[in-house]
Image 1: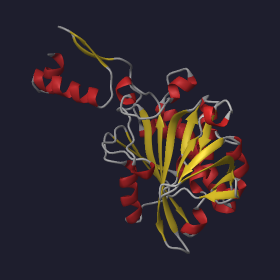
Image 2: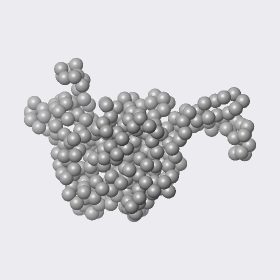
Image 3: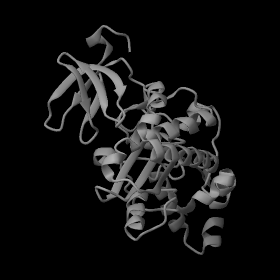
Image 4: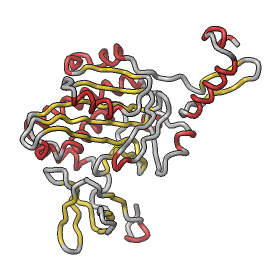
Length: 313
């Protein structure tokens, strides 16, 4: 009744709104005669706090926080097409149609993840930016370690994992000419707090930042930390390419020297031992016919189960 009175709506409208929040992944308690209560407090994004965590790096970015959007990458691509400035960050509390690689949906509760996209302009052509996704992975590893996730790892081509469970992902989309310049939209999704309702929609083992850190995470601090490391890595990448970051990526490779199966666009499967990636970000797999290179595209990668290799996973 108090909520309805303060908002100038009916009690039925409050009830319908609470149901909508539950469908969006929030856990809400009901107490008859007393109302509703969130299971846990939310860490909402605030551009002022994000700039505070960015400190001296704040001049590199313009941060926009939206309550809701279809997809931050979609908005960032529109911004890029309209000659939007490099360093523009679009973050959202809720994406109605968030997407990952291969068109897969990205599931997250309201304020339960970091879902943001960064517009970054390069003078180079698209062909020279083939290692951008793993370079962004290096930046995220640095940030996660600073936030207290020492055992985070990278799964080629664009996943962040911890102990075999997905923690987040990267989606790169580009616009530009073969000779340059090029505008990249760097999309990142990072699970911060996964509710049971969200987990039911995900078809693979997942984890979140708060589980990994063992504490409540301020999403403003986490985003600021990621953006600082991203700017540092992109500066190196533009100057020296992914080759300068490759060794660091290799140290975080989750499936180094493990037996994997690569599914090709035509459905064929090839099996071999993963040996990391080359200077262009292509996956190296030692197979019976020699070393093979795979570029991300529509390729899918899976670990071969231990019972088929004789190796304990």
